[in-house]
Length: 401
Image (tube, rainbow, N blue to C red; front, side, top):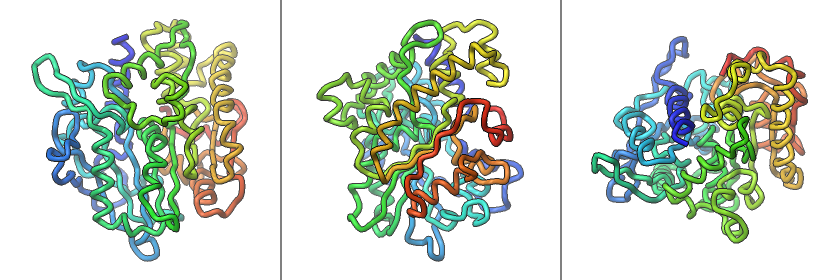
């Protein structure tokens, strides 16, 4: 199954870290420097290549000085020693390649009150992703050249949170724990553990963006390729420690790595943001390169507007699977969700999708408004699900994924 792994790496190297260094046209604010974890080697909390992991911390101000937003970066996964070894020569596997990031103009990280009214002046932390297993593994392996490949995502998560506690997180009055894509999955995996680190009077909630990855039983060729890929990640990187015990008692560890099972056991209030036509999942779960999709499908996977009616029906089935898997949230009063029908992936880190005049809307509210209403309890039952594609005209303003 090497082709799907290779494609995943190439795609995610191209798209990793939505907060890219010094984007042109960004607001004229200073970029946020990388802070490398102190004592990383001694703690065994290191990136794939053994370098210390990093994060970007921007201090809050005014009435936001006691509030914290922590975001776990995404960037796919690696499932073989060869692929994980290759990531060591990139920002997804080594802090040697991490540069300062510009927060201005980037959705939930924006310091502009107009575009980010609820979180603009909070302490904001962007935790870099360099382990390849959603901050969940604890193992190591040996590359072909004899060097060690470190699978220490769980230790990175624990050590970074510990260091941030010493930098003021322990005194927070309210916290939002977030992540996008593989980082969204990490948020789901660690949500209850993270919440348990704070006194009960502290408002701690979790927010997973584009992290609701589906266990699609068959890709377009009839193979269960994504499950097989996840299975290799679970085995190689030893992620069992972060999986819920009640799930492991009845199911295979790989099944317990999927959000469908994870959300059944989470007690902390959580918000799920996802597209029911998630572009990454359509391109890599339903239509991976290993499935050798025919030419008409290649055009469809690049742009949903190119899909014919038969193909749209297949995509509708993916949507229906997601909606069905999320039904458990209806019984969780403190949870929320925003499931749109836009062909996109990760919507919190870009102003155009988070909060702008052309942002996607459900119930005449954009994502920033719905998330804020949920977090601060301004609305009850914040659970928005869009109609089937192409019913929502507010999706049209989003750029191609």
